Amino acid sequence: MENSTNLRTRRGPSYCVMGLLILAIVALTGIIVWQFIRVNTVYFQGQADLNEIKTALSSLEQYAETLPPSNENHDSLKIELILPEEAVDNIDNTEDVITIVQAANSQSLATINNYLVIFSILITVVVIAIPIFNYLFIQKEQIEQLNRQYAKYDEHLISEAKKLNEQYKEYEKHLVTELEKVKKSIDMMQTVISNNSNVLGLGEQGRKSEIAQIEPISDSITDKAYAHEINAKMFASKKQFDQAIKEISEAIELIPSNAKYYDFRSLIYHNTSKYPQALADATIAIELDPNSARYYDSRGVTLHQMERYEEAIEDEKKAIERDPNNAQYYDSRGVTLHEMKRYEEALVDKNRAIELDPNNANYYCSRGVTFHEMKRYEEALADKNKAIKLSPTNAEYYYSRVITLCKMKRYNEALQDNKKAIELDVNDPDYRAYLAFILFLSKKYTDSLNYIESIDNSFESSLV
Image (tube, rainbow, N blue to C red; front, side, top):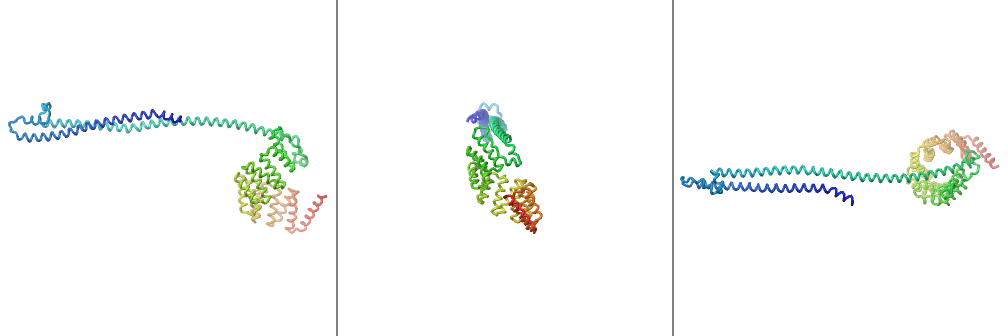
Protein backbone atom coordinates (compact mmCIF):
# COMPACT_ATOMS: atom_id res chain seq x y z
CA MET A 1 0.00 0.00 0.00
CA GLU A 2 2.82 2.39 0.84
CA ASN A 3 4.48 1.82 -2.55
CA SER A 4 1.17 2.39 -4.39
CA THR A 5 0.58 5.67 -2.53
CA ASN A 6 4.06 6.91 -3.31
CA LEU A 7 3.59 5.97 -6.95
CA ARG A 8 0.34 7.94 -7.22
CA THR A 9 1.97 10.91 -5.46
CA ARG A 10 4.83 10.95 -7.93
CA ARG A 11 2.52 10.71 -10.93
CA GLY A 12 0.14 13.44 -9.66
CA PRO A 13 2.04 16.55 -10.96
CA SER A 14 2.50 15.02 -14.41
CA TYR A 15 -1.18 14.27 -14.79
CA CYS A 16 -2.12 17.79 -13.56
CA VAL A 17 0.09 19.45 -16.18
CA MET A 18 -1.34 17.23 -18.90
CA GLY A 19 -4.88 17.99 -17.74
CA LEU A 20 -4.30 21.78 -17.72
CA LEU A 21 -2.71 21.62 -21.18
CA ILE A 22 -5.63 19.66 -22.60
CA LEU A 23 -8.14 22.05 -20.93
CA ALA A 24 -6.35 25.10 -22.42
CA ILE A 25 -6.34 23.49 -25.86
CA VAL A 26 -10.06 22.68 -25.61
CA ALA A 27 -10.90 26.27 -24.50
CA LEU A 28 -8.83 27.83 -27.28
CA THR A 29 -10.37 25.50 -29.82
CA GLY A 30 -13.85 26.49 -28.61
CA ILE A 31 -13.05 30.21 -28.97
CA ILE A 32 -11.72 29.70 -32.49
CA VAL A 33 -14.72 27.63 -33.51
CA TRP A 34 -17.08 30.25 -32.03
CA GLN A 35 -15.31 33.10 -33.92
CA PHE A 36 -15.33 31.00 -37.08
CA ILE A 37 -19.07 30.40 -36.80
CA ARG A 38 -19.72 34.11 -36.11
CA VAL A 39 -17.65 35.37 -39.05
CA ASN A 40 -19.06 32.66 -41.28
CA THR A 41 -22.56 33.79 -40.34
CA VAL A 42 -21.70 37.42 -41.17
CA TYR A 43 -20.20 36.34 -44.48
CA PHE A 44 -23.21 34.36 -45.60
CA GLN A 45 -25.55 37.11 -44.35
CA GLY A 46 -23.56 39.61 -46.42
CA GLN A 47 -23.83 37.39 -49.44
CA ALA A 48 -27.59 37.21 -48.94
CA ASP A 49 -27.78 40.98 -48.54
CA LEU A 50 -25.69 41.46 -51.70
CA ASN A 51 -28.05 39.28 -53.68
CA GLU A 52 -31.01 41.22 -52.36
CA ILE A 53 -29.32 44.52 -53.27
CA LYS A 54 -28.63 43.28 -56.76
CA THR A 55 -32.23 42.20 -57.14
CA ALA A 56 -33.48 45.54 -55.76
CA LEU A 57 -31.15 47.55 -57.97
CA SER A 58 -32.26 45.62 -61.01
CA SER A 59 -35.88 46.37 -60.12
CA LEU A 60 -35.10 50.08 -59.59
CA GLU A 61 -33.30 50.27 -62.90
CA GLN A 62 -36.31 48.86 -64.62
CA TYR A 63 -38.52 51.31 -62.74
CA ALA A 64 -36.24 54.25 -63.52
CA GLU A 65 -36.41 53.45 -67.19
CA THR A 66 -40.16 53.96 -67.01
CA LEU A 67 -39.85 57.47 -65.48
CA PRO A 68 -39.79 60.61 -67.65
CA PRO A 69 -36.35 61.68 -68.82
CA SER A 70 -36.71 64.95 -66.99
CA ASN A 71 -36.38 63.27 -63.62
CA GLU A 72 -32.69 63.73 -62.91
CA ASN A 73 -32.73 62.34 -59.40
CA HIS A 74 -33.77 58.80 -60.26
CA ASP A 75 -30.28 57.36 -59.30
CA SER A 76 -30.50 58.96 -55.89
CA LEU A 77 -33.98 57.59 -55.52
CA LYS A 78 -32.78 54.04 -56.19
CA ILE A 79 -30.03 54.35 -53.61
CA GLU A 80 -32.25 55.79 -50.92
CA LEU A 81 -34.56 52.82 -51.19
CA ILE A 82 -31.76 50.33 -50.38
CA LEU A 83 -29.11 52.03 -48.21
CA PRO A 84 -29.44 54.06 -45.04
CA GLU A 85 -29.50 57.78 -45.42
CA GLU A 86 -26.00 58.35 -43.96
CA ALA A 87 -24.48 56.04 -46.57
CA VAL A 88 -26.06 57.70 -49.55
CA ASP A 89 -23.71 60.74 -49.42
CA ASN A 90 -20.68 58.54 -50.16
CA ILE A 91 -22.25 56.59 -53.01
CA ASP A 92 -22.54 57.91 -56.49
CA ASN A 93 -24.25 55.00 -58.19
CA THR A 94 -25.37 51.36 -57.78
CA GLU A 95 -21.96 49.95 -58.68
CA ASP A 96 -20.53 51.58 -55.54
CA VAL A 97 -23.12 49.77 -53.43
CA ILE A 98 -22.15 46.42 -54.87
CA THR A 99 -18.47 47.22 -54.46
CA ILE A 100 -18.96 48.11 -50.77
CA VAL A 101 -20.90 44.94 -50.01
CA GLN A 102 -18.44 42.78 -51.91
CA ALA A 103 -15.55 44.37 -50.00
CA ALA A 104 -17.30 43.60 -46.73
CA ASN A 105 -17.83 40.03 -47.79
CA SER A 106 -14.21 39.69 -48.95
CA GLN A 107 -13.06 40.97 -45.58
CA SER A 108 -15.27 38.41 -43.82
CA LEU A 109 -13.92 35.66 -46.07
CA ALA A 110 -10.34 36.74 -45.32
CA THR A 111 -11.11 36.66 -41.62
CA ILE A 112 -12.51 33.14 -42.03
CA ASN A 113 -9.37 32.04 -43.84
CA ASN A 114 -7.20 33.53 -41.09
CA TYR A 115 -9.13 31.65 -38.45
CA LEU A 116 -8.82 28.45 -40.47
CA VAL A 117 -5.06 28.95 -40.73
CA ILE A 118 -4.82 29.63 -36.99
CA PHE A 119 -6.98 26.58 -36.27
CA SER A 120 -4.83 24.40 -38.54
CA ILE A 121 -1.66 25.65 -36.86
CA LEU A 122 -3.18 25.02 -33.46
CA ILE A 123 -4.22 21.48 -34.40
CA THR A 124 -0.74 20.83 -35.79
CA VAL A 125 0.86 22.11 -32.62
CA VAL A 126 -1.47 19.98 -30.52
CA VAL A 127 -0.79 16.87 -32.63
CA ILE A 128 2.95 17.41 -32.26
CA ALA A 129 2.97 18.64 -28.68
CA ILE A 130 0.84 15.90 -27.11
CA PRO A 131 3.16 12.99 -28.17
CA ILE A 132 6.18 15.03 -27.13
CA PHE A 133 4.74 15.79 -23.72
CA ASN A 134 3.51 12.22 -23.41
CA TYR A 135 6.96 10.88 -24.34
CA LEU A 136 8.63 13.17 -21.83
CA PHE A 137 6.25 12.15 -19.09
CA ILE A 138 6.65 8.45 -19.96
CA GLN A 139 10.41 8.81 -19.89
CA LYS A 140 10.15 10.46 -16.51
CA GLU A 141 7.91 7.67 -15.23
CA GLN A 142 10.26 5.02 -16.61
CA ILE A 143 13.23 6.65 -14.94
CA GLU A 144 11.35 6.80 -11.67
CA GLN A 145 10.30 3.16 -12.10
CA LEU A 146 13.91 2.15 -12.76
CA ASN A 147 14.98 4.03 -9.67
CA ARG A 148 12.37 2.21 -7.63
CA GLN A 149 13.42 -1.14 -9.09
CA TYR A 150 17.06 -0.34 -8.38
CA ALA A 151 16.15 0.53 -4.79
CA LYS A 152 14.28 -2.78 -4.42
CA TYR A 153 17.16 -4.67 -6.02
CA ASP A 154 19.58 -2.93 -3.69
CA GLU A 155 17.46 -3.97 -0.72
CA HIS A 156 17.33 -7.53 -2.09
CA LEU A 157 21.12 -7.62 -2.44
CA ILE A 158 21.55 -6.39 1.11
CA SER A 159 19.10 -9.03 2.34
CA GLU A 160 20.85 -11.81 0.39
CA ALA A 161 24.23 -10.63 1.66
CA LYS A 162 22.92 -10.87 5.22
CA LYS A 163 21.58 -14.38 4.55
CA LEU A 164 24.89 -15.49 3.03
CA ASN A 165 26.72 -14.06 6.01
CA GLU A 166 24.46 -15.99 8.38
CA GLN A 167 24.90 -19.17 6.32
CA TYR A 168 28.65 -18.67 6.35
CA LYS A 169 28.59 -18.38 10.13
CA GLU A 170 26.50 -21.54 10.42
CA TYR A 171 28.82 -23.35 8.01
CA GLU A 172 31.81 -22.17 10.01
CA LYS A 173 30.25 -23.55 13.19
CA HIS A 174 29.45 -26.83 11.40
CA LEU A 175 33.01 -27.02 10.06
CA VAL A 176 34.44 -26.49 13.54
CA THR A 177 32.19 -29.28 14.86
CA GLU A 178 33.25 -31.64 12.07
CA LEU A 179 36.91 -30.83 12.63
CA GLU A 180 36.49 -31.66 16.29
CA LYS A 181 34.97 -35.02 15.30
CA VAL A 182 37.87 -35.68 12.94
CA LYS A 183 40.31 -34.77 15.67
CA LYS A 184 38.59 -37.21 18.01
CA SER A 185 38.80 -39.92 15.36
CA ILE A 186 42.50 -39.24 14.84
CA ASP A 187 43.08 -39.37 18.58
CA MET A 188 41.27 -42.70 18.73
CA MET A 189 43.27 -44.13 15.84
CA GLN A 190 46.51 -42.92 17.40
CA THR A 191 45.52 -44.71 20.58
CA VAL A 192 44.84 -47.86 18.57
CA ILE A 193 48.19 -47.59 16.78
CA SER A 194 50.12 -47.04 20.00
CA ASN A 195 48.37 -49.84 21.89
CA ASN A 196 48.00 -52.34 19.06
CA SER A 197 51.05 -51.94 16.85
CA ASN A 198 51.33 -55.68 16.30
CA VAL A 199 47.63 -56.14 15.70
CA LEU A 200 47.51 -53.59 12.89
CA GLY A 201 50.50 -55.14 11.14
CA LEU A 202 50.08 -57.24 8.04
CA GLY A 203 52.11 -60.18 9.33
CA GLU A 204 50.93 -63.46 10.83
CA GLN A 205 51.66 -62.22 14.34
CA GLY A 206 49.30 -59.31 13.89
CA ARG A 207 46.49 -61.53 12.63
CA LYS A 208 46.74 -63.89 15.60
CA SER A 209 47.11 -61.29 18.32
CA GLU A 210 44.22 -60.15 20.40
CA ILE A 211 42.80 -56.72 19.66
CA ALA A 212 43.00 -54.23 22.50
CA GLN A 213 39.75 -52.31 22.52
CA ILE A 214 39.82 -48.53 22.58
CA GLU A 215 38.05 -46.47 25.18
CA PRO A 216 35.79 -43.47 24.47
CA ILE A 217 37.48 -40.09 24.84
CA SER A 218 34.54 -38.75 26.86
CA ASP A 219 31.49 -39.96 28.77
CA SER A 220 29.03 -38.70 26.18
CA ILE A 221 26.71 -41.26 24.57
CA THR A 222 27.92 -40.26 21.11
CA ASP A 223 31.58 -40.85 21.93
CA LYS A 224 30.83 -44.16 23.65
CA ALA A 225 28.82 -45.38 20.67
CA TYR A 226 31.53 -44.20 18.29
CA ALA A 227 34.16 -46.14 20.25
CA HIS A 228 32.05 -49.32 20.00
CA GLU A 229 31.65 -48.72 16.26
CA ILE A 230 35.44 -48.44 15.79
CA ASN A 231 35.99 -51.59 17.83
CA ALA A 232 33.35 -53.46 15.82
CA LYS A 233 35.04 -52.50 12.53
CA MET A 234 38.43 -53.56 13.88
CA PHE A 235 37.08 -56.98 14.93
CA ALA A 236 35.29 -57.40 11.61
CA SER A 237 38.47 -56.57 9.66
CA LYS A 238 40.17 -59.43 11.54
CA LYS A 239 37.18 -61.72 10.89
CA GLN A 240 36.37 -61.89 14.57
CA PHE A 241 32.69 -61.54 13.77
CA ASP A 242 31.24 -62.53 17.13
CA GLN A 243 33.18 -59.76 18.87
CA ALA A 244 32.24 -57.36 16.06
CA ILE A 245 28.54 -58.12 16.54
CA LYS A 246 28.88 -57.63 20.29
CA GLU A 247 30.52 -54.22 19.88
CA ILE A 248 28.08 -52.90 17.27
CA SER A 249 25.14 -54.19 19.33
CA GLU A 250 26.34 -52.11 22.28
CA ALA A 251 26.52 -49.08 19.97
CA ILE A 252 22.91 -49.77 18.93
CA GLU A 253 21.83 -49.93 22.59
CA LEU A 254 23.33 -46.48 23.14
CA ILE A 255 21.88 -44.91 19.97
CA PRO A 256 19.03 -47.13 18.68
CA SER A 257 18.03 -44.53 16.07
CA ASN A 258 21.29 -44.77 14.13
CA ALA A 259 20.50 -46.58 10.87
CA LYS A 260 24.15 -47.18 9.87
CA TYR A 261 24.74 -49.30 12.98
CA TYR A 262 21.95 -51.68 11.93
CA ASP A 263 23.29 -51.71 8.39
CA PHE A 264 26.79 -52.62 9.60
CA ARG A 265 25.48 -55.43 11.82
CA SER A 266 23.38 -56.65 8.89
CA LEU A 267 26.55 -56.83 6.80
CA ILE A 268 28.30 -58.92 9.47
CA TYR A 269 25.33 -61.29 9.73
CA HIS A 270 25.32 -61.59 5.94
CA ASN A 271 29.03 -62.45 5.82
CA THR A 272 28.48 -65.15 8.45
CA SER A 273 25.50 -66.56 6.46
CA LYS A 274 23.01 -65.54 9.16
CA TYR A 275 20.61 -64.25 6.56
CA PRO A 276 17.39 -63.93 8.63
CA GLN A 277 19.20 -61.73 11.18
CA ALA A 278 20.82 -59.76 8.36
CA LEU A 279 17.41 -59.24 6.76
CA ALA A 280 15.89 -58.02 10.04
CA ASP A 281 18.64 -55.45 10.62
CA ALA A 282 18.55 -54.26 7.00
CA THR A 283 14.79 -53.72 7.32
CA ILE A 284 15.23 -51.64 10.49
CA ALA A 285 17.90 -49.54 8.75
CA ILE A 286 15.45 -48.82 5.88
CA GLU A 287 12.69 -47.90 8.36
CA LEU A 288 15.02 -45.43 10.05
CA ASP A 289 16.29 -43.97 6.79
CA PRO A 290 13.96 -44.83 3.88
CA ASN A 291 15.80 -42.48 1.51
CA SER A 292 19.08 -44.39 1.65
CA ALA A 293 19.75 -46.32 -1.55
CA ARG A 294 22.55 -48.33 0.08
CA TYR A 295 20.24 -49.86 2.67
CA TYR A 296 17.87 -51.14 -0.04
CA ASP A 297 20.84 -52.61 -1.91
CA SER A 298 22.09 -54.28 1.26
CA ARG A 299 18.71 -55.90 1.91
CA GLY A 300 18.40 -56.85 -1.76
CA VAL A 301 21.72 -58.71 -1.64
CA THR A 302 20.57 -60.61 1.46
CA LEU A 303 17.25 -61.50 -0.16
CA HIS A 304 19.22 -62.76 -3.15
CA GLN A 305 21.19 -65.13 -0.90
CA MET A 306 17.89 -66.33 0.57
CA GLU A 307 16.72 -67.02 -3.03
CA ARG A 308 13.86 -64.56 -2.64
CA TYR A 309 14.70 -63.12 -6.03
CA GLU A 310 11.52 -61.14 -6.77
CA GLU A 311 11.82 -59.24 -3.48
CA ALA A 312 15.52 -58.68 -4.17
CA ILE A 313 14.68 -57.21 -7.58
CA GLU A 314 12.21 -54.79 -5.95
CA ASP A 315 14.78 -53.61 -3.41
CA GLU A 316 17.45 -53.12 -6.09
CA LYS A 317 14.92 -51.16 -8.15
CA LYS A 318 14.29 -48.83 -5.20
CA ALA A 319 18.04 -48.43 -4.70
CA ILE A 320 18.46 -47.44 -8.36
CA GLU A 321 15.55 -44.99 -8.14
CA ARG A 322 17.26 -43.23 -5.23
CA ASP A 323 20.74 -43.28 -6.75
CA PRO A 324 20.54 -43.92 -10.53
CA ASN A 325 24.26 -43.32 -11.08
CA ASN A 326 25.57 -46.02 -8.75
CA ALA A 327 27.03 -48.88 -10.77
CA GLN A 328 26.92 -51.35 -7.86
CA TYR A 329 23.11 -51.32 -7.74
CA TYR A 330 22.80 -52.18 -11.45
CA ASP A 331 25.29 -55.03 -11.05
CA SER A 332 23.44 -56.36 -7.99
CA ARG A 333 20.16 -56.43 -9.89
CA GLY A 334 21.93 -57.94 -12.88
CA VAL A 335 23.29 -60.78 -10.72
CA THR A 336 19.81 -61.53 -9.39
CA LEU A 337 18.32 -61.47 -12.89
CA HIS A 338 21.10 -63.86 -13.94
CA GLU A 339 20.09 -66.30 -11.17
CA MET A 340 16.51 -66.08 -12.46
CA LYS A 341 17.89 -67.01 -15.92
CA ARG A 342 16.67 -63.68 -17.32
CA TYR A 343 19.96 -63.25 -19.08
CA GLU A 344 19.01 -60.51 -21.55
CA GLU A 345 17.73 -58.27 -18.75
CA ALA A 346 20.78 -59.12 -16.66
CA LEU A 347 23.00 -58.12 -19.57
CA VAL A 348 21.32 -54.70 -19.81
CA ASP A 349 22.00 -53.98 -16.12
CA LYS A 350 25.57 -55.22 -16.28
CA ASN A 351 26.25 -53.10 -19.37
CA ARG A 352 24.96 -50.09 -17.48
CA ALA A 353 27.21 -50.89 -14.52
CA ILE A 354 30.25 -50.96 -16.80
CA GLU A 355 29.20 -47.67 -18.45
CA LEU A 356 29.07 -46.01 -15.03
CA ASP A 357 32.30 -47.60 -13.74
CA PRO A 358 34.43 -48.83 -16.68
CA ASN A 359 37.48 -49.58 -14.50
CA ASN A 360 35.77 -52.03 -12.15
CA ALA A 361 37.13 -55.52 -12.81
CA ASN A 362 34.28 -57.24 -10.96
CA TYR A 363 31.65 -55.87 -13.37
CA TYR A 364 33.51 -57.29 -16.39
CA CYS A 365 33.82 -60.69 -14.73
CA SER A 366 30.13 -60.58 -13.78
CA ARG A 367 29.11 -59.81 -17.36
CA GLY A 368 31.48 -62.52 -18.58
CA VAL A 369 29.61 -65.06 -16.43
CA THR A 370 26.33 -64.02 -18.05
CA PHE A 371 27.85 -64.27 -21.54
CA HIS A 372 29.09 -67.75 -20.58
CA GLU A 373 25.58 -68.90 -19.60
CA MET A 374 24.29 -67.50 -22.90
CA LYS A 375 26.97 -69.62 -24.64
CA ARG A 376 28.60 -66.50 -26.04
CA TYR A 377 32.02 -67.80 -25.04
CA GLU A 378 34.18 -65.41 -27.06
CA GLU A 379 32.52 -62.39 -25.41
CA ALA A 380 32.72 -64.11 -22.03
CA LEU A 381 36.44 -64.72 -22.53
CA ALA A 382 37.02 -61.09 -23.60
CA ASP A 383 35.29 -59.77 -20.44
CA LYS A 384 37.25 -62.11 -18.16
CA ASN A 385 40.50 -61.10 -19.87
CA LYS A 386 39.58 -57.47 -19.16
CA ALA A 387 38.85 -58.29 -15.50
CA ILE A 388 42.25 -60.00 -15.07
CA LYS A 389 43.98 -57.08 -16.78
CA LEU A 390 42.38 -54.66 -14.33
CA SER A 391 42.99 -56.91 -11.29
CA PRO A 392 45.75 -59.45 -12.04
CA THR A 393 46.00 -60.74 -8.45
CA ASN A 394 42.38 -61.87 -8.06
CA ALA A 395 42.21 -65.67 -8.02
CA GLU A 396 38.47 -65.78 -8.70
CA TYR A 397 38.88 -64.11 -12.10
CA TYR A 398 41.41 -66.75 -13.21
CA TYR A 399 39.13 -69.51 -11.97
CA SER A 400 36.18 -67.99 -13.83
CA ARG A 401 38.25 -67.86 -17.02
CA VAL A 402 39.23 -71.51 -16.47
CA ILE A 403 35.57 -72.54 -16.73
CA THR A 404 35.09 -70.65 -20.00
CA LEU A 405 38.33 -71.99 -21.50
CA CYS A 406 37.22 -75.53 -20.68
CA LYS A 407 33.93 -74.94 -22.53
CA MET A 408 36.02 -73.79 -25.48
CA LYS A 409 38.20 -76.97 -25.05
CA ARG A 410 41.33 -74.88 -24.61
CA TYR A 411 42.55 -77.13 -21.80
CA ASN A 412 46.22 -76.14 -21.73
CA GLU A 413 45.31 -72.47 -21.16
CA ALA A 414 42.72 -73.51 -18.60
CA LEU A 415 45.36 -75.58 -16.81
CA GLN A 416 47.70 -72.59 -16.59
CA ASP A 417 44.92 -70.32 -15.26
CA ASN A 418 43.94 -72.92 -12.66
CA LYS A 419 47.52 -73.16 -11.41
CA LYS A 420 47.63 -69.36 -11.20
CA ALA A 421 44.42 -69.34 -9.14
CA ILE A 422 45.91 -71.93 -6.74
CA GLU A 423 49.07 -69.84 -6.50
CA LEU A 424 47.07 -66.75 -5.54
CA ASP A 425 44.77 -68.59 -3.11
CA VAL A 426 46.29 -71.79 -1.79
CA ASN A 427 43.49 -72.47 0.70
CA ASP A 428 40.57 -72.72 -1.72
CA PRO A 429 39.80 -76.45 -2.26
CA ASP A 430 37.69 -75.79 -5.36
CA TYR A 431 40.71 -74.68 -7.33
CA ARG A 432 42.61 -77.90 -6.56
CA ALA A 433 39.64 -80.10 -7.32
CA TYR A 434 39.02 -78.40 -10.64
CA LEU A 435 42.67 -78.82 -11.59
CA ALA A 436 42.22 -82.60 -11.41
CA PHE A 437 39.06 -82.22 -13.51
CA ILE A 438 40.96 -80.27 -16.19
CA LEU A 439 43.63 -82.97 -16.32
CA PHE A 440 40.90 -85.55 -16.79
CA LEU A 441 39.26 -83.51 -19.61
CA SER A 442 42.61 -83.16 -21.36
CA LYS A 443 42.89 -86.97 -21.19
CA LYS A 444 45.81 -86.90 -18.77
CA TYR A 445 44.21 -89.56 -16.65
CA THR A 446 47.33 -90.64 -14.76
CA ASP A 447 48.19 -87.06 -13.80
CA SER A 448 44.60 -86.54 -12.73
CA LEU A 449 44.61 -89.59 -10.46
CA ASN A 450 47.98 -88.68 -8.98
CA TYR A 451 46.80 -85.16 -8.25
CA ILE A 452 43.63 -86.46 -6.57
CA GLU A 453 45.75 -88.77 -4.39
CA SER A 454 48.01 -85.84 -3.42
CA ILE A 455 44.94 -83.85 -2.41
CA ASP A 456 43.70 -86.74 -0.26
CA ASN A 457 47.08 -87.14 1.39
CA SER A 458 47.22 -83.41 2.15
CA PHE A 459 43.75 -83.58 3.69
CA GLU A 460 44.65 -86.58 5.84
CA SER A 461 47.82 -84.85 6.99
CA SER A 462 45.85 -81.82 8.07
CA LEU A 463 43.63 -84.01 10.27
CA VAL A 464 46.53 -85.59 12.15
